[in-house]
Image (cartoon, rainbow, N blue to C red; front, side):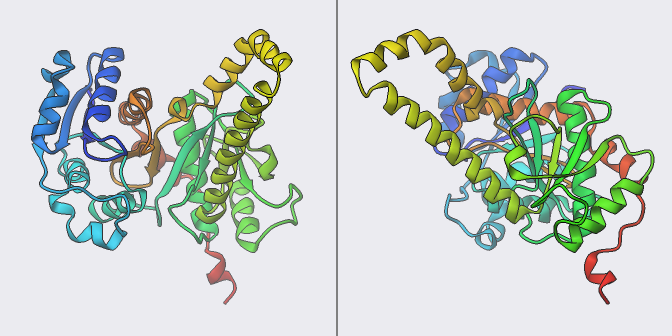
Length: 347
């Protein structure tokens, strides 16, 4: 099946120019990709002039309005039928496209997607999942990264199933390793919700994952686990801490290399290594977070992504469609033991 992907051309820091350029790069790598660009028709047509080979594989759907970067989710919902973001997600709902990609307001995209597409049967809440760089050859899948501030045990089990399905598609693992983020690795550590979720995952047979208990935040980047599961509050804090640490390390290296003549000479000698580090930490190489658990594929591109980053987000959307992410999640949901939320067990 040729994936046809809706692109919110007006989202992100740069807008139509970079979104169209990213789609063009993705189609250069995968000739079968088809696109529906949603947004200001004049701007999209102007951007397409630089990519004539893309025009034959594209259609334009004019949108009168744009979701602003600072719009509250409630505001975005009210006007969603006229915005490029809302119309792109609406095209997924109608079946006109296979997936949608937007670099716009994350909270607005989550709210619009959840209202339009609803959650899959057996999923209580969608989760935001992304690939994060590690010390190993493959990235780690981490979720939830901010869609749900509070989660019960059943949410964590569902996130584990969705994250494992995502990992199988993106990395080709038959049984990805899965761990829950905790304050310690011992069985007795953490909240009641974590304990209940861990027990349920341990006792469920037939799941396409290898559940290995708990991990701590300092192990996120080691590459020793394929999927790390947590609530959106903890996940978002962990993500921002990792991003800040990466910036700190690169800025510190830059400052150190410029501190003296000897340091500058040392930089020239070590430049191949520093360039490799820069490439490994470049967020554009890991761009494309996905809202798992919806009745459709919606991918969130970073707002500051360049054309390479947008192309990666498009490719993530296409792979999830081509490898039937919704069907994979549904299959494993049918295998999991019934998990009662912690709130109910406390009564």
